Length: 515
Image 1 (cartoon, rainbow, N blue to C red):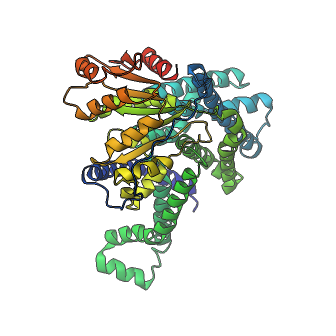
Image 2: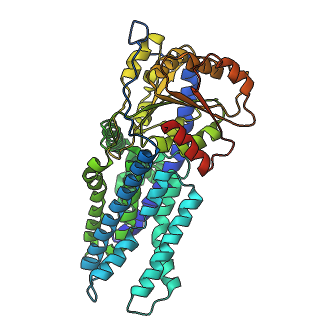
Image 3: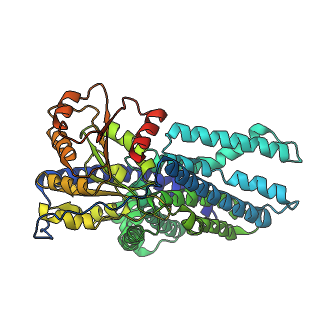
């Protein structure tokens, strides 16, 4: 395989859009399956035989406030940057020591190349802060321009800034395509990265089979000639490309099960997984040209710099560990406003996860934002119905199974109650009883939204609830809402106008939640 670099690039370029396409398809099927189960009820049997138990709220650490949230978010940002710098410096040392050995190197050259290789720190921050694709691309371009200036100023040779920038941008194209394919949309951000290893493995199996076919095309075995004569040349090629999947599918399923299990065991978070996949694509793309140097396939040793990803999170675990006694946030919203709720999730709830747990009743509006590798594997295994609460008696057991421990990156996961039309009210009562603060999005609320009216009544009557932060806009029927909460304790409901979720509005919401 003298053209192994081209084959690997082709496999990645094919696996990326395939993962994205499958991500959209799986997300749509997941959403459809959820909707059917919500309306029709889950098929599994009840796992309890009594009414939902009432659980007391846990004590909340008073030190967890907006300043603490900002501090923990900065720490995670710094860890992502530090890991990226460690990978960049390791890769730069490997390249200078074993690939580009002419003229030797000093500390300055190593540092410049390390900064050059560490550019994925920018999209990593974009993933954490939920930047738009345009803002992430602008950040990468700005970083590459700064590195171009640094390279030109620190070089002893005369170099064109345009040439240097073009070279840097060319090296970033495949990874940026990976980011575009796997994480450009919130609908597939949690799905496509999980499918990428499976797609890459299946494509690799197909390419190995086609490579075997190409080697034997001049002296084909009799069995191959029979196949070609029977079904034709193009169908035979397609057959040889897809036939290995019958064998490869089993280790692929095993890989998916292993990843889901590792995620369930909190070995990594969804952010850490996407960060790791992105860096793996970057490293493979960087070492491929070096396979044509004197070290040949030894260039793949440079991929070992990826080990800084798990090692970095292990080393920073104590620093990233959040304070004990986290608050629990219950998120309620007007359904069928998918775009607005998804924007709120990215702008506010993702930030909140740095401070405490998030619980909600699952809905199709946020399904692709809250789905995780374990959910995807459960769905693909046709066991999604097991997640649904079949009767009110099951609520306590389901809530007792919530994952309320922080991930290795210091953030908390989102826990959901999968409910049918017959069980969501019981689940709401139990969630209200355990939550310390509620974020209720009533933008677009009307008197006809009976579910929201029920939720408002439950929040108004709940004993001991700390506060309810309610978002509203010009379309919100305040009169209908005020009627429903008239008996609530004074000061329980805090109303925030949120027609536009700009930075100031986001900070006001977080301050109210963490105040």
